[in-house]
Length: 210
Image 1 (cartoon, rainbow, N blue to C red):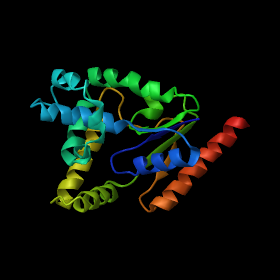
Image 2 (cartoon, one colour):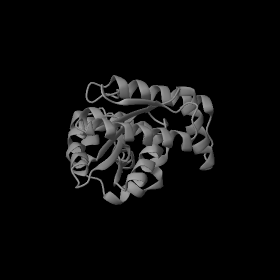
Image 3 (cartoon, rainbow, N blue to C red):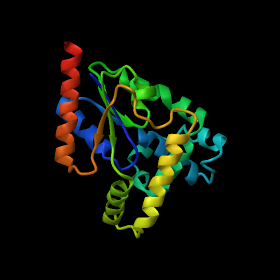
Image 4 (tube, rainbow, N blue to C red):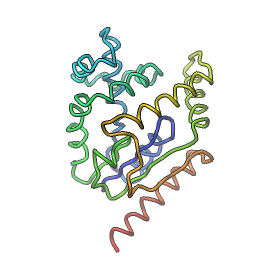
């Protein structure tokens, strides 16, 4: 079974995808980490994330970078949003993601173009979202919990800017697949959002077997 979970930053899609993977015993891939790794690799090499050549060269990053705490930083998030707009970067990471999808038994992937580009054949597709204000508060709380000195208004502005970049890019923009089920987590805690996600997948399974 392949489960595609898409949505904007801080919507809860990663938490939900991990919970679905645990529930169904499937491997999970946070595809956003791949782009964050490229973004951080560009920054650490002194390159410019908006320069496609710099970004493409950074696609050959050491896999150990995927566990680097720096990937959770706002700088990594901004850089990831920028490098992900480059066609050559998306092409370089595309096959890696599709190989993950092709694993025997299936997989759970979360990102911004899983249901539309990476695994359009996925029988279960969720588009997880929440208001920009709620998402900014979640990210603000997360960053404060990491001991970082952040300002809510700055986090909100960054969330909105990333939404605009991700939705407006010409290659694989962030959007809900036609057959994806919308899950708004604005008023849901983790347990409630997870329960609703499992319910959606179960309904998908019943529908595919009918």
